[in-house]
Image 1: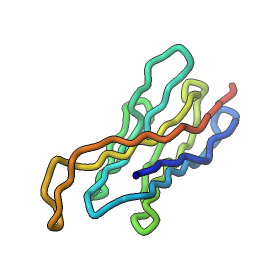
Image 2: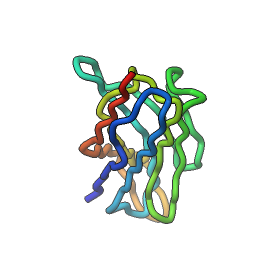
Image 3: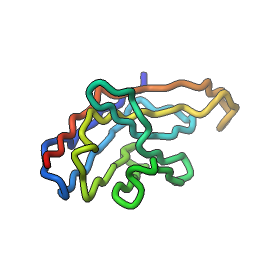
Image 4: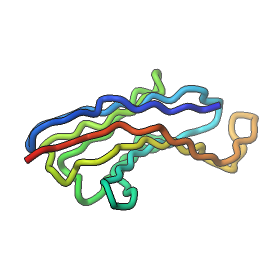
Length: 126
């Protein structure tokens, strides 16, 4: 069973930085993408950034130029470096990993699936 665990959240002042980590375990021979979402109180969960199996990244317009996603494939871990934080970045940050599928890969069958972490809180004060 795939498990996803986030860490690195905390409280910072506006203009500060934080680095979130997302460690996945239980991966099989299938391919996986990983992404970050956040949810502020009273708001819907929104996309923040993603890093695909091939290393390509995407960002929400609100974080472009400030946040950077990276990965360590050997550790099945992705990171979200967050700089120039703003109060509106406050929220619970969730990591999601998507098993790419359905597809045949490396001699096996890979059904699609999504796995979410429990989240890590980020609070940015003005």
